[in-house]
Amino acid sequence: MKKIAAMILAMSLCLSAVSAQALTVTGLETETITREWETSLFFSRMEALTGVAVSPHGVADEEEYAQLIAGMEQGNIPADVLFKAGLTREQEQSLLDAGAILDLAPLIEENMPHLSALLEENPQWLETIALEDGRIASLPLINRTERQVCVWINAAWLERLGIAMPTTPEELTDALIAMRDRDPNQNGRRDEVAADLTGVYEMRWLLPYFGIVADDYNLARDAQGHAVFAPELPAYRDFIALLREWVEQGILPEDAFTAMHSTQALSSSEEETATSGLLVSMAPYSAVPVDASMEYQALLMPGPDGETRWRDMLGPIWTGCFAVTRTCQEPEKALAWVDALYGEEGALLAYAGVEGEDYAYNEQGRWTFLLDGGRNINEIRSEVLMYTGTAMPGLYPSDFLAAVDSDIDLHVITQSERVRAVSEQVTPAYALNAEEQARADELAATLGGMVDRGIAQFATGERELTDENYQAWLDALREAGSAELTALFEGV
View (cartoon, rainbow, N blue to C red):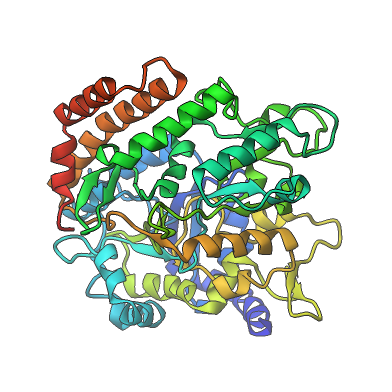
């Protein structure tokens, strides 16, 4: 990193000479901490690393950015490069067809050695990045150890109550009743919410405990690998019956389908005591006090066949992060610049900054941000880092981040890795052509609402969970297109 500091000084002496050739860069900045691209150290350090000058401007208003993207199809090109582009597959296709952005497929091998090496090692990633016709509209974020959505159980409470980690739905039910009734947070109040789940989306993460791994299309795979509409599996009714039992027994609060998390409801107070026995999130501290996060472990429960499986929601490739527009006079420079982010040195600039200036290692080989001189972590996020907010292109530096000197972060990473080890994707990303995908999205929107409403109605007792009523629900889903949706993904 000393090389970067020296290069920054050298580059500062000739900025006026290269500014005329600087690549103009724009994109969507959704970081909640104010970040001004024009003054961010990230871009000047990337210039020092790559020798490519850029003139950046981030757009913080999502509606404004959507209008900017729409205007590109009409020939209004705002910059040479879209960084943190946030493009959907539909936008990629439209912008390519309109000639607003370049097809990067013939340019990657010659101009991007870091990304080319990664794609050579993992040729399946190229299938995700490329459109059906082989064109490449944008470059991705690659995250080999992506954080998983987990069901977190308060293991400290289990130990305090003398209860083993549950391995079946029945054992989980008994454990949650004990959490509700026996004051495991020891604050003298009956404030524990056993299953602190809000809405059907969070509740559906219990499906693997019934041997069902389903995605947002409500699709799963049977034993032969064929696509199946998940509510039609016999065990799906067992899942709904469990929710109904939890509502009846007070394990789920009455307003679980509409309320906020129990600890979030206390956010206006100084309450620091965990009140949640079971919750769903990527990290416990999104729903409970940070100091309580170490109490939670990811709950892995084998299905009826004894096999533990989980749904990988995101996969290692997040597309739509970087595109080169048709007005870019030197696309090879744009690709050389972004290729640095697929190597370790460039990735660290985005995720940690510069060693000795923004972070340092301790004697144990763990690193931490340098917060001396009154600087706080929000200032580092704002002025130095770039990865937060809209997904950026490049390689997620997993090994480096796993060496952070933070017990809480290491705990969450370790638990997430336990879940990732048994995770799978139900439907491959971008497995359908544009026409099929549009139809699948239309069907999924209709059917998803019907599934969520049906689960809530059965679980709350608004609709009695009988054979007749359940079959009527399945018939209505089939009439709305569940079989057609399943057929679209058969064989992919």
